[in-house]
Length: 163
Image (tube, rainbow, N blue to C red):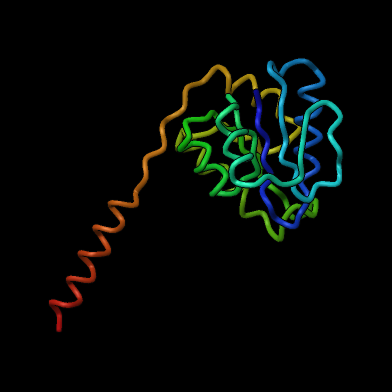
């Protein structure tokens, strides 16, 4: 089962929803898909969908899926990876009215280079990315929060010592 999430931004991501809808229509997505479509204007024909989900519904969809297909937002990617899900991330692009700039391109590329996700830079490449995500193993997410806090505490202590 695929769970698609495009977040709650005011921007549509019709290219991604259309690509997943086509993937489901082709029969390639065993178990089908559910999409959280946000501000998209395209209405999927081959998968169940809702514009927005509350926390409980979102959690239930995340728990039930095998693969998450998401936009290139760090919160969406990290949340899915922390849950141990296989993730395909597709960046929103400004030229299609999907965001204000193309910063998600770098985010998706970096997470891919870290071996955490399957980057898919163009929704047209989603069928190939789906085959890849099913056949590959990805690294688990490791938080750097504890290390960051320790470094920050050391820095603050150093400032105090300099007085």
